[in-house]
Length: 348
Image (tube, rainbow, N blue to C red; front, side, top):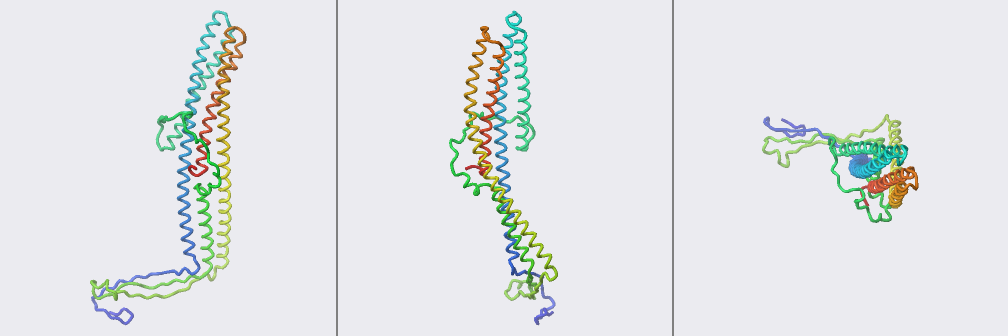
């Protein structure tokens, strides 16, 4: 048996031949395609990191919100208990003819308002607990509590120069950067497609009289031929393909710029929120202390007949509102710290 190259094998010879093909990367098409694929892979990895950071931040925000609701529920319960006790006193005085029915009705209004507020807060707590359970991938269950919001250790000092480090940390910026690299490489692929490509085709295999000699150096045979193929009738189409990829690259570039600008804005907003909520919390603390004293004095004046129950009513409401606002200021300060962590790509 002849192999076509002048070599004859016996009838019991063994032959294993296969067609193969190679493309010579004359214009960098394959190189650009490989770089684009690698950039796409890196963008996907940064997206995964971004999702992880977002989930951690969202879980922390929900926890601080939950503990804030717990605090406000406790404030409301204590307030309701105090109002019920005072309502009992006012009711006894009314029955003895010492106060008017209006005072009794106003006391009842205060007690009912705080009771209604308790149910509202309980409802909000369940909603937040459900949100936490959904993030954790589980059905509803009461969330195990840890530290109270006022027991959390806030950063003593936010380091300066944070914005200049932003580009090195945020996954969304890295994602946008890799997407821009990928699209730029795809422009190179489109440009390369406008030129002819050189393909090498043929066969490569082994032919041997005996299977035992398959791995001998002389057992391998092959033939290679070259073929030049090109976009002869597709000049306009390939030109438009390049223009389309270039337009996409400009669009991705604008997206990258927007991502960077948004990142700087988020950092600045978080820093401003931390500062202002911290100042607000300190002011609310002073407000609560003043309204507590005001309520005590108002009750003393009313009990001795020197003022109307309206002044007690106003002081009571002001104390309740100031305690609520103090709780919210601390909660928002903690949440702003979490948002700064997220804005910086997972810390500083």
